[in-house]
Structure formats: C-alpha cells, structure tokens
Image (cartoon, rainbow, N blue to C red; front, side):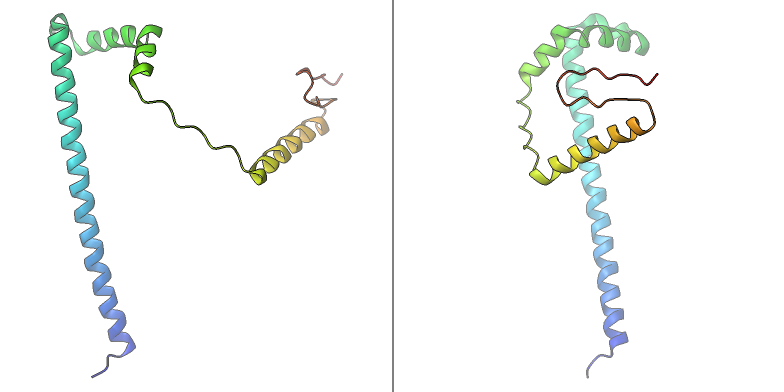
Length: 134
C-alpha cells in the first residue's frame, strides 16, 4: 500500500522530532563533558598554584583577585605567557574585492565628512593632517 503525501509528511515530521531529540541529547552531553573538563582544569591549576604559593591559601577572594591582577598583568608575566603559547595564525591577505570595497567605504566616509564642513581637504595618503573648516 502506498503512502499518501500526508502520511509521508507525518513520517518525516516524526523523523525530524527524533533527530532533534537526539541532537539535544548530544548537545547536553557535550556541555557536560566541557563542564567536567573545565572543573578538572581549574582544580588542577588551583592546586598547583597553592603548592607554589601556600601563602595565598589564607587570602580572601578579593585579596587573591587583587594579587592576581597585580602580578599577572605585569609586562613580564605577559611576555612569559606569549612565549608559552603557540604563535598566532597568519591572517590571510584581503581579497581584491574586499580591499576595493574597504577603500570605497573609506573614501565615501571622508567625502561625507567633507560635505558636512568638518574637513575641507582630504589627505591623499601623504601626511595625516586635515584642515578644519573656518
């Protein structure tokens, strides 16, 4: 017996509902795995931190936060962190169309400012000075 179009639609709707439920279950499992991994990472790092600096154990949260802010935001700390991290990926050069569009937008913005009387001349790339309208 052949199914009518309505029956086929109902079958597809049931399949969609099952797939959505399956997707939702997988997303929840993924979030739970990420939560567990984060908790483990924080716990391990905090434990190592307390081993290295046991004096911090008795600090209040605000004192501990202040300590971290003052020590980790120092230039030397940032330099060490950059050395430990992998190099940043190289950004692809802009494609010709994107470059032309960006230049066109910049020219248009400069023209609008000039028309509003805020700029009387648009620099041509030589020098960065603009003259204010009197």
